[in-house]
Image 1 (tube, one colour):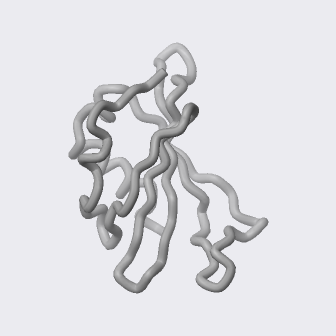
Image 2 (cartoon, helix red, strand yellow; image 1 turned 90 degrees about the vertical axis):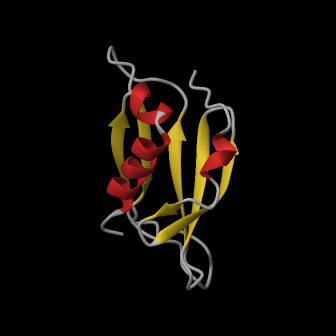
Amino acid sequence: MLKIENYSKLLRKEVGRWRIGKVEAISSAYLIRLWMQDGTKMQVNLERTPIGKQKEYELWCWNDRPSKVTGLIAQTATPIRIMLQKHNIKDMDKLLGSIEYLIRNL
């Protein structure tokens, strides 16, 4: 089970055009909420349970942004994901770079 100490240090960090506005730890994942200046929001999830022999961690989000009207993701949205090794999570700059890479085309 992945445990990131001081994950709150991610708050207010810039990720491309986005800014991290909230980070929440739940039993299965870290929920990283991003905002743009125009009020657009999205969430990136970092799963806490490693996958496979390499013990990599899944960083994922939906390939669509929530509707500004309803706040919901379209039912046709699909997840996009990348796998991270633990040393890439421990380094804040690498983690921020991985989030930026994940959301670069959204």
